[in-house]
Amino acid sequence: MLLQRLAHSFDLSEETTEFLVARWDKMNLEEVLATRGVDLSTPVEPEVSNANEIANQTNTEKLHLSREEMVFYVRDSWEFASRHREQVAKQMYARLLWTDESAAVLFIHTDMEHQSELLTHMLDVAVSKLDVLDEITDTVRELGRRHVSYSIRPEHYSTVGASLLWALEQTLGPQRWTDKVEAAWKLVYTILMSVMLEGDQEARNGL
Image (cartoon, rainbow, N blue to C red):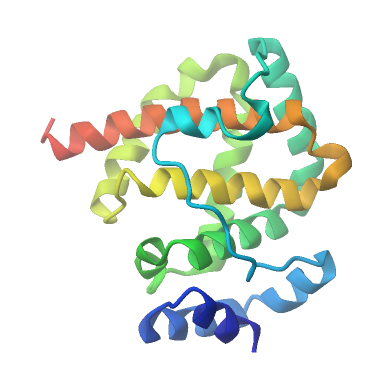
């Protein structure tokens, strides 16, 4: 079985493996991945550890996008990706669970279908507010504060970001996932992650 093979490849605990099998079988993950020709068992490079590194990965580091370009490329690509929102969410969480066991165990008692809906709704809101991000800064910061109570650690933000970018790349395909699109999404995620980490730090400091 695909899930069990992946769990073995990443040396996941028995508890985490049981969770993966129970949760993702219900969502027909194998069928979704097979239709896309996706092989999640391929070993991945160590993920980045902070917001600045997210923005500077790969060959996009030399691209300097204006705010207008960032808004355009993210909105244009999300217009297509959002038509496949269920696929984006499933692949994002699947990638996260395979590559970060410390994050995987946090979802053991989570309704993953509902969690996937929350993710894509958040993306809808963020993309719609790209040109007025100040309007959602307080909401995003509060989201970071709340995530502390869910046992989310600061280092999880980088693996979540890497998983989201990977899922978008898989959904958009090579023709739509250009260097500029990748750079734009990295920039947006870096901005949002930085604000969430502010909330995270405030919560840990009791502010």
